[in-house]
Length: 155
Length: 326
Image 1 (spheres, rainbow over the protein chains, first blue to last red):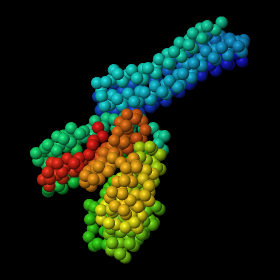
Image 2: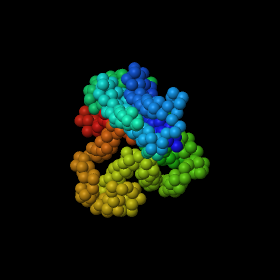
Image 3: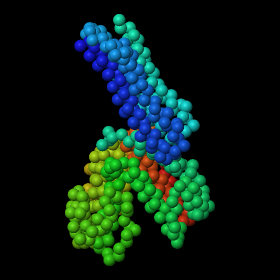
Image 4: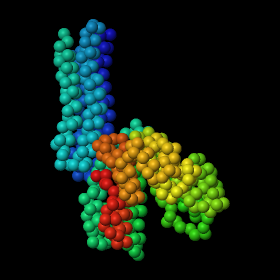
């Protein structure tokens, strides 16, 4: 039961953050395609803005790897006798990345789409346009740090 | 419907907004020495200047092509154009009016029909000529029959116009509300309110009675039609007094200046209200605002070029030039 809870936590981190990133990059991609249809020279700029909401999925994957590694799944010797308490600790440690990853990716996509619109009208403002979605990234990174610290702190 | 998010379409419109005509460009256009020079300037902006034996024919073809271009673009961007019904339904009623009037004459004029409506112009011709109103949408059937019967029995073109214009205003208002989009609902409301004010003022100036006003005015949310018709039957000053208590109090000075000043005020009011859509990233609002902005610039170009073709004084053209969206 403990191992199952730990696995559920690891899977949730990858799953929810991945869903958020998929939705985010999808929305960004639609907006980017709209701009490139009219002005193909903006491709590289809008591609970067599209990719920004994709990082949460990578963070979720990283947390899942660390958790799976700590509980022995990666080395092929899972801790089958893990207590429910320890399993719950892993589960709770993965939650910041799971939920903040999901929500921040979706919110970052909104900022990215708006910034893609900005680049469409003022390509010279690309540098500034990157900052707005990058601000949302801060909270995904904070969640990543908390999840890493929490997982590493489990005895 | 307004919950739908148009990421691709709005991003494309953001690029397209760069091609919209700005106020400084309109100034330059007004400064063009000849119609040919003005047409060249528009051609440089990507406008498709048509061929024709006269300048006015070339201008007319160009303006038609530009209107079509806008709706072709929207057709590419949006799966279901019914969201823009509020912007297109007036063309349907225009076509219905043209078909009804055509039924009374032996002349056939294809060019009086518009291609921008939600229904093909030929459907109206068939429905009216064959009195087969089932070809039309349900909400148009009764009004089409009533307008045709009125015209055939009374030969009163104005009465026929009143019936169709009121139905058009009602349809615009309903389509705006049905769209579920705040900006489209506001557009519908402003269109009906400004039309009501125009009708009331014209009726007051020509001494029309209350019965006429009740037939002509369409219901809207920001004006009390009963009070407006009472005021109109009392005279122009009573209309101004009533308007001073509404959100349209700014219109009073324009109404006192001239009918064209008021028309410009109405269009500018719509443009000012849609301008915040420049900053909205993915709703239907920026798409609708683009369509309205294109209509507005086409109207302004028509005013400027008509002034040049007919050698009108610059001041007369200037007082009709609309504010631009960008």
